[in-house]
Length: 296
Image (cartoon, rainbow, N blue to C red):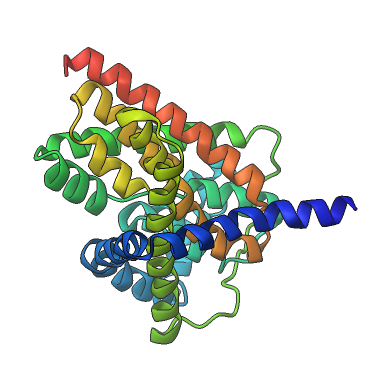
């Protein structure tokens, strides 16, 4: 009986989304179209090359050598040199490259989790180029968000090292071959999730009229890019902390993209979501303090 109730409870939001789509198909088809456009214009050109190139890079001797050299610094977070290398590449590339690369490493479960948390980051292309320059018209705002984003991620990951054993010494790539096909499939999964969650965010806004600010927070929790775009119309003292939280937490869309890679590799979803939420809250708090200090 309890299993049947849980199954029905899980099916309820799916059935509700289907009903809303049938009631107002034009409205939600438009939301899906906006999500596809967002993916094609802003995400695909930045993410696809990195998905392909990083998957190839992890199989080279140069990556193995760099991982060994980085190992002493990576131990600060109780991750291996390979984990530190993945975190650096993720910091340059942005979501969801770090999750895909982390899933390709042979690591103990605890170290895999810490590596996933450390490499779950956005990148300068999105924060400075898209959010700072395109949305706010101020690249400096993008750099401020980037600083708060990485400080929050690194601070939380530093505390995750407490009680953790020493990192493994010889992490090796896990069998998947870096090629064009796997990169294409990965970026299509990203595009599909953006399109779907764009529609889901619109549905939630229609069902829960929370006002302008509440609606912005709701949309940002579902899809971070949409949330940042809506927040850009507010005063910087409110907009920037909101964006710092959205981008660092990731929103349901980015979290879903990451867990597509991480969950099959052994990363437990609920602890990962908890870590991302704490990172997001810390990023928002840091940004709020800096906005106050800078008089924004």
